[in-house]
Each structure stands twice: as structure tokens, then as C-alpha cells.
Length: 141
Image (cartoon, rainbow, N blue to C red):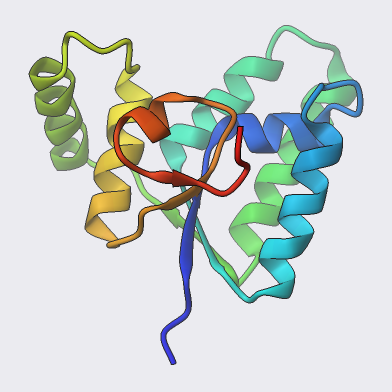
């Protein structure tokens, strides 16, 4: 049986780290559901950069928590982190150019391309751009 794959966006990890985030509770529930249902979680080093960028302006404790999360992601056998590559970045730039009428970030474009590569349409994100790009957001905004 093939394991269902789901792409997890940076905003989900950010909400997990911040108990005051408006999405914290819902994200925690959904992540438990994903674990229970045996999904293969996919994310990317681009997403990790966004997480670290988000918390760079906070104090040492928050930064340490973010770094601990990143370490946990890399060591979890149920999580696949897609690595940065020049080819992947070039493809994202092409998508960015092709859809310049959208407000998609370059990181969005890399995520969409990864989802296409791994042949999944399911994601978890608070970013409405995933739905706009034709993906199914299991967070259900």
C-alpha cells in the first residue's frame, strides 16, 4: 500500500512553535490526524529557511525552539525534507514568471513544484495560494 504524501508549509511549523498563533490549536489537531493516518510528511529546505527567517528577530529562547524543531524534522524518519538545488530554483523562477499575475512567492513556487514532483495534491498551510494553485489544503480554511 502506498503511503499518502502531504506537503507541510512553513506557516504550519510556525504556528506549532507559537502557542499564541491563531492557528496553533487547529494545526496541532491536524498534525495529530496526519500522524495517526500514517501520512508521509514532505517539506523543503526552502520552508526551513522561512521558519528560521520568521524567528530570527526574536530572542534566544525562540530561536533555540526553532532550531530544535528543525533538528527534529531532520531526524524524523516519517518526514522527508527536499533539499535545495539549482535546478529546483530555476524551475521555481520559471513558474514565478509564468504566473506573474499571481501573488505567489518564490518559495510558494518551489513548494508547488515539489508537490508536482512527488505527485501529491494534499497540503497543510494557512496560505491560500496552495488552493489557488489547485492543491487540496487539509487545514480547510
